[in-house]
Length: 54
Image (cartoon, rainbow, N blue to C red):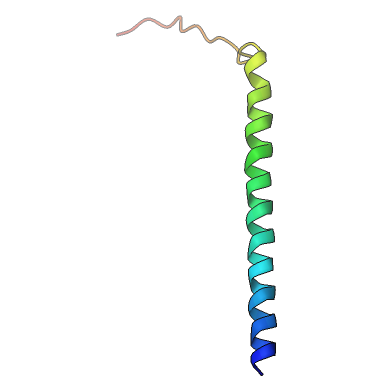
């Protein structure tokens, strides 16, 4: 019985480690993707307000 509990605990620990690694990998890939956009100019259109104020 103790062996089964130990194996179950090890399996849960391994699963948590894999999940944490996958989450970290997603964060790193998002940071890398955002850092690539630093080399591009601002691609948003410029808006000029021409209405007069009342």
